[in-house]
Length: 255
Image 1: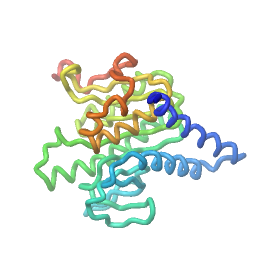
Image 2: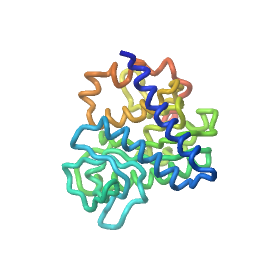
Image 3: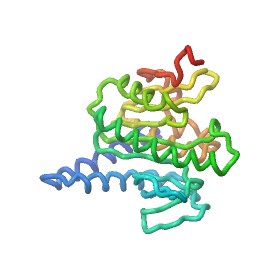
Image 4: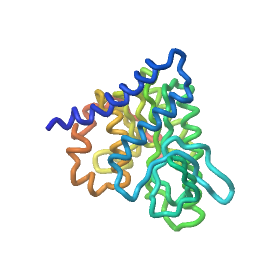
């Protein structure tokens, strides 16, 4: 069994679809191109999610209005659904487990805009918990991510600085996972025994970034099972030998 190749096949599958679309369209219709890519991502993730979780696209509904449209929305199907028609759903904040923006290609400018959209939607969920529950948000876990098939960003420090800039005013604005091409992966680490600070790490994971991004969503909803089978879901072992950079959430002076 070749687990590494199994996970690298995710990137190969996504690239195959990307090239097929471009081969069929002399002048690609980018809205259609994006919708197909979102659909493929949903289908791949759907293969691995436990049965009680669904993945669609749509909106988070609150008494004061709706979120911006969400490309990939993972929700707990044991909660009531306001509206559902195939992949399109309207759900309440308490059902949400993951919010993902999907992009065909990112530049520093388009990534900044995508982060703003994502943060807007994340705050809707977090404000719900502040208002209606006694849950401590410092312990509340929500997968928030951006998945980009391609990027023209070469320096991961540009992304780390952008993430820090978006989060520096408010802890709740942390975006915790990014995949920007086949190999560029970012993760926000809560403080723990080997990383005493809350910080983002950037990694170069050769043809494994898509699988690691999607597998972290699975880990979000089924952490005990993933931890018990860690070598399957994260076959590289420690990613830290592949780390290319880091950015702490708080400056040393603020700690």
